[in-house]
Length: 309
Image (cartoon, rainbow, N blue to C red):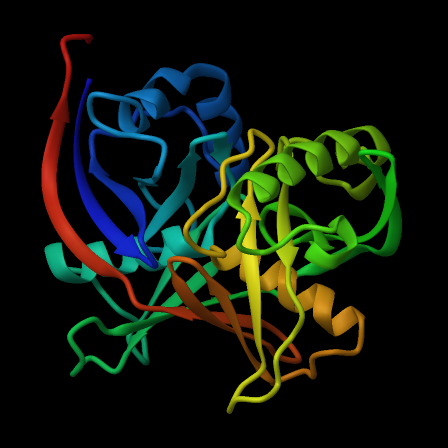
């Protein structure tokens, strides 16, 4: 296997963009591409993410040939937990990598478009005079599948929201889990327990998500703080394996915003700052779409290669 990749950092997460060398697929739609990669090319995902080329904090995306008119590429996420339809950080990283490494055609306003299994994604680079330009992911509003639902976690009944924002999230308050946002071990344990409980209680097919996502992820949220210029909330992104990420991620930030809006704690058009250990994202739910802003930094371009063909 051989691939040319661009490594991009956002909020201390490493995002690997495959520029060349992705598997050639028979698929003609983004959803079919996702299914084909899951069925036939998990070895390529592991090649990108596991030693000697990767580690547990690396996630990736594949830039495939565009499958629809007007798109720069078809984008598929290759995450630690498997192939996935979209991730906001990956869309931002792909924009940063392409803007700095290739001749690309931006449409009006400097926006790039990517096709994904979760629909058309747009991303715009702003404030180009800064050291690391702000990059804004523009997508559809997240879908609130359940709100104020009861879930039994470790013998405790907790209230959760289920949100589809490109990935499927269970959003739960840290105080309801009786854990601290600073306790990494407790967050990891809670993530595993919440995902296990959600798989039993909330079948993905009941929300029309079968074939699109394969598992739940967890967003643990603290109390919203309105003392500053913008509402801010501490968050933790946790996978079903207990991995606690450095950042909220783009889809995770959207899930938190949808959860808070369902509680009446966030207004449409209000900018929410989701604060994670690696840094913040700025998230806004608008009437007809949603936006997440971050600051990607290109680390470098390199070629990965092993002895298999």
